[in-house]
Length: 203
Image (cartoon, rainbow, N blue to C red):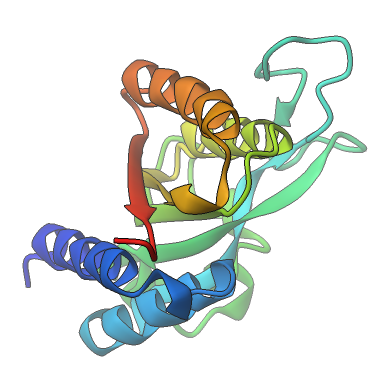
């Protein structure tokens, strides 16, 4: 199976569905559901939602302008420093799944650090989704953290942040304040694939 093409086709199908019928998507979970339903028939047990990150994170920036490794991100065995986050979805490497499918503690990422080296990649994909329905600038901080989390995902070969935007629900100023930093993120983050899709019920 060409997993890369399957993933790309699924993202394309979801994006087209959103463009054609944006009113069918009430919240981010609607995207998760459709994404899972399409991919599960192809990947089955190697596809998992809400999978824990290997590293630990601190979401609050404090006095920092950007997220910094060692300040906002720590190794899994660090004590009293941050906590595990979650990816919206992951796809295991088949070799990893086949080797550890009978070991819940390892497969669920509870004790993976004691069995694999930090540089080992046991995920083919890690995905994050974001659904933007207003011009609130607070969402930029959430997206920046998601990008940082994916950037630090050394366990994943391929990383996707997929952003869906309801443009017609925003003022022109609100949309501009959202899209300008998102476009900059998209240009500068070469280690994370950032896709931006639009839905407009007026079209």
